[in-house]
Amino acid sequence: MSGSTSYHAGLAAEDSVARDYAGRGYDVVRRRWRGRGGEVDLIVREHGCVVFVEVKKSRSFAQAAHRVSRRQMDRLCNAACDFLGGEPTGQLTPMRFDVALVNGTGQVAIIENAFMAA
Image (cartoon, rainbow, N blue to C red; front, side, top):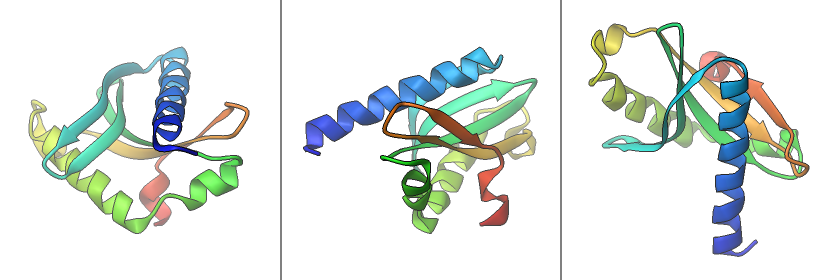
């Protein structure tokens, strides 16, 4: 995939994931939020819980999941800390990290609390 094609495919995947969360009653708070620690693809909120979402697209869900690296998890955690600094309860804000996988046909699979086992 060329850089431009890959970029637009990533945007389309993020759009699909945002629609999925919105359809399940989450509020989409930010897209491609950038802090000192890095970028968060999607930030959503449900009942006071902030959810930081890493979106991965590939031909299959397995290939997409395989593309989540420890380094990316660390960057996402650092960016989340930056974001929580602006929340009323700061680092005490209820939160979790999800990974949203998008396959080649555009189907979405959400892994909630994805970093618990990492």
